[in-house]
Image (tube, rainbow, N blue to C red; front, side, top):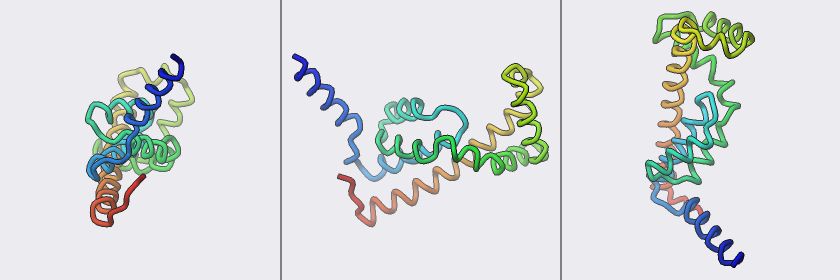
Length: 154
């Protein structure tokens, strides 16, 4: 009974994380993981959810989110502040300084309308734009390597 259950679980996990997929699905899964890994917040569960919903390769999506999760958020935040500041006509340096000042005050400061529209929204728009561009670039590179260079994962 236990062996049968373990075999079913093993078969399910193997099917769930199958990497032998079309180049478009593997590259799309990786791009989704990279995109959600760069955006601040937890990206692992949301990556699995969206990869499942859009029928993308879940293993590639997990690899993308693990490759970019958390550490790239800190590296990309100045660029995201610059892009978000440009879109919302704000100074990127003051945007980052205000973010760190409010971050130290705690979660209550982030819940105010003023902080949301003048601080959080510009930063999130910047992160979405930058993460989208990076994800598209990695999609194109990975798709090219999988499709035309015939790289196979087994």
